Amino acid sequence: MITAHRMPQYLLWLDFESIDLEYDGPQLEVGVKLTDTDLNVLARYETLIRPPEELLALLEENPFVLKMHTKSGLLAELLSAPRESLPMIGDVEVELLDMIEHYVGNAQVALAGTGVGHHDMNVLAVQMPTLHGRVTYWQMDLGPSRREYEFVTGGPLTAEPEGGIAHRAMADIRYAMEQYAAFAHMYRMDALAKKAAAVQSGAPERALIGLSLIDAFREHAVIDTDAGEVVRTDTADEMAALYALTSDQSHMAGLMDAGARLLEAAAQASGVSADEIVGRVRQNVLADAAQTA
Image (tube, rainbow, N blue to C red; front, side, top):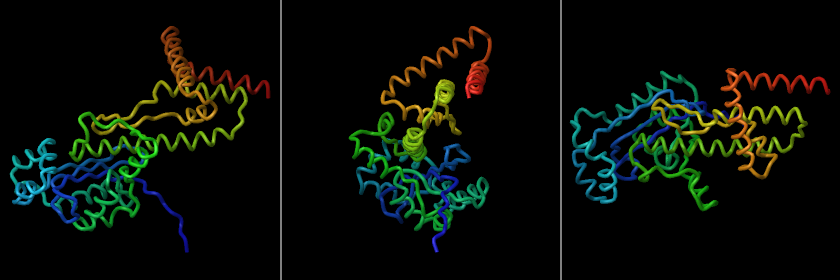
């Protein structure tokens, strides 16, 4: 019997920094952010992990990784920290399970990040089996999606961080979240545009859509995480609807920008808030529509 598929309600953004790609190999650092699907951060966790005593010898066997962890500053932090003060991987697992339980209880949680599907999930299976059993089989792995986009379009979806990938857990999580936000926006735009293209609208509907767009344009780049990071763009659904009705998106964006500036100028000149002006115009449009119906 086929049962209904339930998508996870929360995402566990995870990144390991390690010595090699072996699933049972030593992990040196882990970063985690627990978010909802809108990227609102509920909790974060970051720690160095107690390295093996032969850390330097192991790194010298892989000059590329040695150079990477030296450049990122991770190696210096590991060598300067009292080794016995750092948690073991099993200790980290317990703390992460407690964090999930505290913030989301038994709700479904999916692993998210870059490479989580083919690497980090397997690391959990070997080294954190209880946490592996706590997350869903479904992962949000931005690595394959990013490579698919670059393969098809020939260019990146978002700009790479200045200086390249940081190879530090929290910084790499932030980059993965930026990728997720960009893909989510693109998918929503596509879905809403298809829906809007099939809808016939009259003058009042077009006026209300335009008004909503102008109003939304003033605040369409607002996001906050626990570190004050801007990682995604909130754009009104109506923006996609209007884009579906025009092939010249730059022209439409210019009209929205001009409308938003005119709205702010009117608010300053009249001493009335922009929200109140939008409300009055919306009421007038609805009143006109009612009279002509």
